[in-house]
Image (tube, rainbow, N blue to C red; front, top):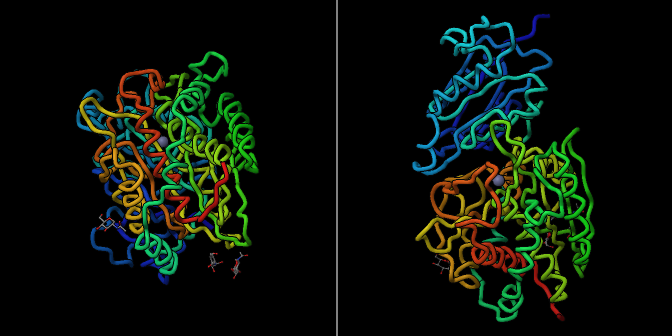
Amino acid sequence: MTPTALGLLLAPLQPASIHDSCLSSKFYGIYNHGDATTRSLYLGDLECLTSFDVSGGDAALAGYTPSPDDVLAWVYQAPASEELLSSHPPFPRALDTFIYQISPKGDYDDSNQLPLESTSDRALLYRSDTSALVYVNREIARRLDTLIPPMWKSALLPSSPIASYPVPTDAVKRIKHITSSLKFSPDIAATVNSISIPQMRNDIRFLTGEDGKSGIVSRHSFADGSRVAAAWLKDRFEETGAHCTLKAFSQGFAPNVICRYNADVKTNATIILGAHYDSRGSFGNTRAPGGDDDGSGTISLLSIARTIASKKVKFHTNVELVAFAGEEQGLVGSRAYARELRAAGANVTMMIQADMLAYRAPNEPLQLGLPESIGTPAVVQLVSNVSALYSPELTVGFTKACCSDHQSFHEQGFASTQVFERAGWIADPMYHNSGDVSDREGYDFEQVKAIAKVQFATVLHVAGFTTSG
Ligand SMILES: *[C@@H]1O[C@H](CO)[C@@H](O)[C@H](O)[C@H]1NC(C)=O
Ligand SMILES: *[C@@H]1O[C@H](CO)[C@@H](O)[C@H](O)[C@H]1NC(C)=O
Ligand SMILES: *[C@@H]1O[C@H](CO)[C@@H](O)[C@H](O)[C@H]1NC(C)=O
Ligand SMILES: [Zn+2]
């Protein structure tokens, strides 16, 4: 039998709307398409893809026959500010260079010239002005993020199609009910206000290696520093009364750090706060301190854990604080965990991902950015209302920055959202580079604390709790 050529469809469809069609078994996830719009990606036989009439769908491509060693990867320009983007070569030009680098050897003469148009298609399946689908071998797949510019992101496609579930209306109703009965609680305010900035400062300096003691140079998922960070995080969370596991999810990657506070009543409902502790550099840089991305989200979880301990908080719902790895390779760790929870029939009330909380541009107020596209609008509304009650110092707005680990929960039908450092585009000049340390202009612990208060207060409202500290 000859292997069938694959077709590709990029459609602005919610996977739920294709439930009964041939497309339902061809879904590979939701990807950033450029200009901060997203597309659902389907791969499979052309007959199915072309039989499906989608207005606004892009690209049905013929003729690619995958080899067993191929890994497909989506690369795209991060939704960053004009100012940041203008200091780098434009995407189409950088893509030509990139394709040249990843193309199988032998496709070019050795003249050291950039490839001609005709040969530059070798590893390329699809391109738009700000995104592309490429295939690479496994070895390159492992270090793809070291080959791309800082303003790009890459995501390895899963090796097989993924099932996707809509968030059930009951789950949304539960969140809306909590929002509609939300009232300021002096008890919650006192609890969240006791989050300690000096403690956060110590924690981030360990994770970035700035303290000169941890020895961490990078928390890249394949780097030694990620293992040091994982073990350290487990110990710190466990000191606060959590039960933690270092859960491996894919060969070679550092594990997810999954920490759980069991409810003091009998329930299987679980609330999850996430962040990713892995980091990345760009263009072969080995130093990747990841102070903002996403050390800041990681210390927000740690600051909440430390306050759970100091205030002796007992929740009436199970609460998990999860530090994911493999985010920078395309949500690999969180996808594995969300799929596992779905398969187990887990009762996840809500998931909130904290990714990049610290950077504040000169002359901007303290901000909280909530995602425009991926996630559950009812959770966005809840978080926004909680922010007004407990962190009035934050200006709340929407962001086009997208696609962190909450997307994995969204795909599996769990209500979710993300918290981010500003409305609008990514503006941190140290994004994905070796300068992303905590001791620098613009790294604002007051903002990290203000957003951590929102994450924590949301959990306290949704979970129910007692304190005795
Ligand atoms: C999830 O937990 C809530 C709160 O305890 C409960 O009302 C609901 O029945 C549970 N749902 C499932 C599917 O287990
Ligand atoms: C969770 O608890 C509810 C009752 O509150 C029950 O109906 C449901 O089956 C339980 N789910 C799991 C996965 O144990
Ligand atoms: C939540 O915020 C909206 C505005 O975004 C407001 O209209 C609504 O009254 C708020 N609800 C509560 C309970 O504060
Ligand atoms: Zn991140």
